[in-house]
Length: 80
Image (cartoon, rainbow, N blue to C red; front, side):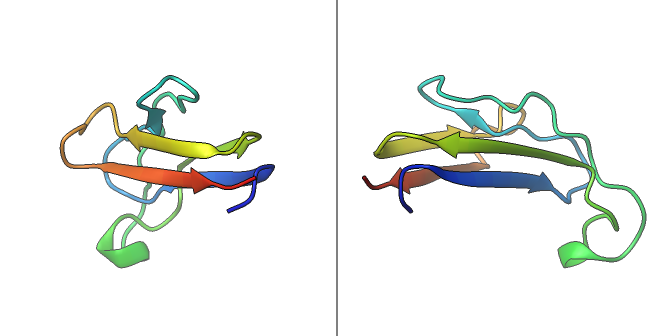
Protein backbone atom coordinates (compact mmCIF):
# COMPACT_ATOMS: atom_id res chain seq x y z
CA UNK A 1 0.00 0.00 0.00
CA UNK A 2 1.02 3.60 -0.43
CA UNK A 3 2.22 5.94 2.30
CA UNK A 4 -0.71 7.93 3.67
CA UNK A 5 -3.02 4.89 3.75
CA UNK A 6 -5.05 4.21 6.88
CA UNK A 7 -5.30 0.62 8.13
CA UNK A 8 -8.03 -0.52 10.53
CA UNK A 9 -7.79 -3.60 12.73
CA UNK A 10 -11.11 -5.03 13.99
CA UNK A 11 -11.50 -7.59 16.75
CA UNK A 12 -14.29 -10.00 15.88
CA UNK A 13 -12.96 -12.62 18.28
CA UNK A 14 -14.15 -13.82 21.65
CA UNK A 15 -11.20 -12.43 23.63
CA UNK A 16 -9.33 -9.13 23.72
CA UNK A 17 -6.45 -8.55 21.29
CA UNK A 18 -4.02 -5.77 20.42
CA UNK A 19 -2.30 -4.48 17.28
CA UNK A 20 1.15 -3.60 18.60
CA UNK A 21 4.05 -2.61 16.34
CA UNK A 22 7.26 -4.50 17.06
CA UNK A 23 9.22 -1.25 16.69
CA UNK A 24 6.81 0.90 18.72
CA UNK A 25 5.30 2.87 15.82
CA UNK A 26 1.74 2.15 16.97
CA UNK A 27 -0.18 0.37 19.72
CA UNK A 28 -3.94 -0.10 19.78
CA UNK A 29 -4.17 -0.96 23.45
CA UNK A 30 -6.72 -3.64 24.33
CA UNK A 31 -9.38 -4.14 21.66
CA UNK A 32 -12.38 -5.57 23.45
CA UNK A 33 -13.94 -8.85 22.38
CA UNK A 34 -17.00 -9.11 20.18
CA UNK A 35 -20.36 -10.09 21.64
CA UNK A 36 -23.30 -12.10 20.41
CA UNK A 37 -23.42 -15.36 18.49
CA UNK A 38 -22.79 -16.41 14.94
CA UNK A 39 -21.32 -13.96 12.51
CA UNK A 40 -17.71 -13.46 11.53
CA UNK A 41 -15.97 -16.78 10.91
CA UNK A 42 -17.61 -18.40 13.90
CA UNK A 43 -16.41 -15.70 16.28
CA UNK A 44 -18.75 -13.35 18.07
CA UNK A 45 -21.60 -11.56 16.36
CA UNK A 46 -20.71 -7.91 16.42
CA UNK A 47 -17.39 -6.18 16.05
CA UNK A 48 -16.35 -4.77 19.39
CA UNK A 49 -12.94 -3.15 19.33
CA UNK A 50 -11.28 -1.46 16.39
CA UNK A 51 -8.17 0.66 15.88
CA UNK A 52 -6.99 2.73 12.92
CA UNK A 53 -3.49 3.94 12.11
CA UNK A 54 -2.27 5.99 9.14
CA UNK A 55 1.11 4.89 7.76
CA UNK A 56 2.70 8.18 6.71
CA UNK A 57 6.13 6.82 5.75
CA UNK A 58 7.36 3.95 3.62
CA UNK A 59 8.74 0.87 5.35
CA UNK A 60 8.00 -2.59 6.64
CA UNK A 61 6.11 -2.62 9.93
CA UNK A 62 5.94 -5.90 11.83
CA UNK A 63 3.23 -6.16 14.46
CA UNK A 64 1.76 -8.65 16.92
CA UNK A 65 -0.98 -9.12 19.49
CA UNK A 66 0.55 -8.37 22.89
CA UNK A 67 -1.80 -10.96 24.44
CA UNK A 68 -0.83 -13.70 21.96
CA UNK A 69 2.59 -12.66 20.56
CA UNK A 70 3.68 -16.02 19.18
CA UNK A 71 0.35 -16.92 17.56
CA UNK A 72 -0.86 -13.60 16.16
CA UNK A 73 1.52 -11.49 14.12
CA UNK A 74 1.74 -9.81 10.75
CA UNK A 75 3.53 -7.30 8.56
CA UNK A 76 2.36 -4.12 6.86
CA UNK A 77 4.42 -3.09 3.83
CA UNK A 78 4.17 0.59 2.89
CA UNK A 79 5.59 2.00 -0.37
CA UNK A 80 6.38 5.64 -1.15
